[in-house]
Image (cartoon, rainbow, N blue to C red; front, side):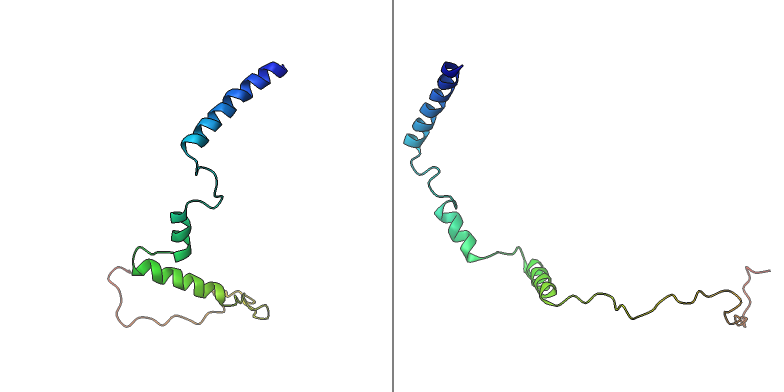
Length: 99
């Protein structure tokens, strides 16, 4: 089994050596090419002013402290019933659809 593993590894090493000879700069920089690094350092570019303003609004929202709902505020403590509601005023003009 050792000879099969060695035979399998040797062609791969030979191919790697050929590629390194053909492309010497391949795999040297972990961050990428100089062009990519320069582009990333310049900052984000926006498609139009709408994209820019939306990104700016998102940044503003992240910076503001998010205040959750007030825990002391009580809502829904009373459920209205038809008997508790005031009477509807009858309309001066009756609808032709009714009656």
